[in-house]
Length: 176
Figure 1 (cartoon, rainbow, N blue to C red):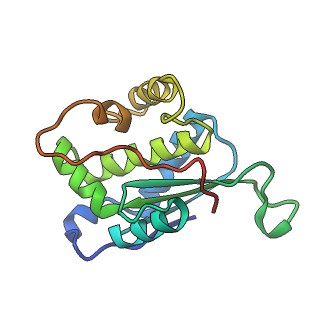
Figure 2 (cartoon, helix red, strand yellow):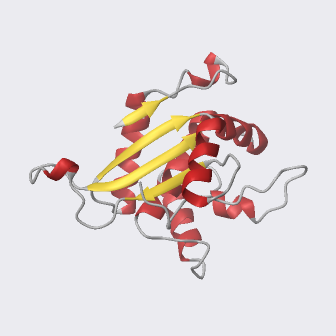
Figure 3 (cartoon, rainbow, N blue to C red):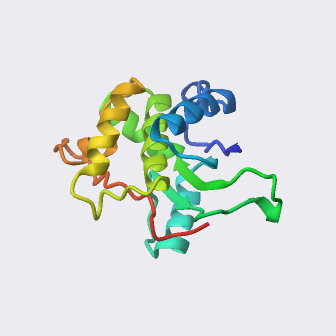
């Protein structure tokens, strides 16, 4: 399921390519590339929503670009045995994504795809905050395979003039 709650601060033109079908097609391709089984729910919202989620689940009272909520093993919808397993939830701030897209010189859609891929890797169990570069390597490989611009991890290590930290905020600790 993909939910889009467009923020008022992003122009309609910037959102015109962010549609459920476009996001769903990319999500399916990226999920297959990552090797992640199960359904992924995606919320595309505003900074205020991500700030609220970040505060609730991580204790950080600030907006962020992407949050990942792994579902855990063998989670099915409402106890229905034939329902698909749930891999987890992703939440992305379209406002932050728009700022980052402008900063890094690509489109809002490309930025959303980068954040989706990054979140999917977290749902698959990767954690760049504790690993020895495995997530960064896998993300770079998949980014090339999916024809995406620079990864969240790679660009966070490169200095960019007047840019606040873009440290990824996907959660391994939080659960939906």
